[in-house]
Length: 302
Image (tube, rainbow, N blue to C red; front, top):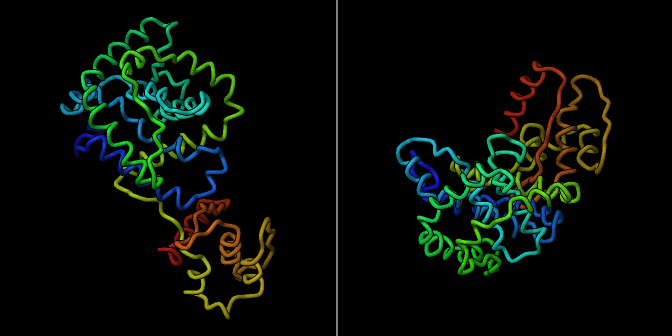
């Protein structure tokens, strides 16, 4: 199980998270510009992020309504070594997995470096619990990967290859080397690390909440036109809907600056056939004005 009360099988949770990823991939296609293999790395990060929950200790604790007491993502991270990518890309996936609940400097994340015998031995002990369910990992979960690849990418990719000696290699995974790589390269790969972790979290959390896709805005111009016919738009509102790039707007009270701002935002958003795929932040100086604007926005978008 990946979740308890209500129960959810690991493969069901992963499938739900991948459904969210597919909607993100369709809605935000420009993420591919961040890194050549961005979508594949996100895909495999989602696949592997909860494998540590296969531990018998996690399963028993969850079934009895108790907390296991160990970070499952630490165990999951070691599986990233079996990705058939260059070292830097394997490390990007590994870091997104190990940080998908806590940051590297969080005291609650026991990263098993060999310099700390107590932490390392704790990892080895929990790994023994994981390997109690090695048959499930190999014969049930891993065997589904090609089907998920076809579902998301339309073809089998085959970049995750579990070797025959995988159990011993999981135990030998070099967390020190991973952390050293991060210390040397985090500035160079900052954007990749931010977006991989962020989107892994988004897919994980939305799937856990029962959502199968990300929500996008409808056409703002159509929403505005529903309340204010296009022929009644003021010249500044029409122009705002055509301007690309920064806009400084000055107009008297009651002129329709809110609609101008929304129409300008639409002109500068990435749009698809289904609607707008950017997030729009409408910033105001006072809580009272924010609350009033919230009610006004509901009139357009509820």
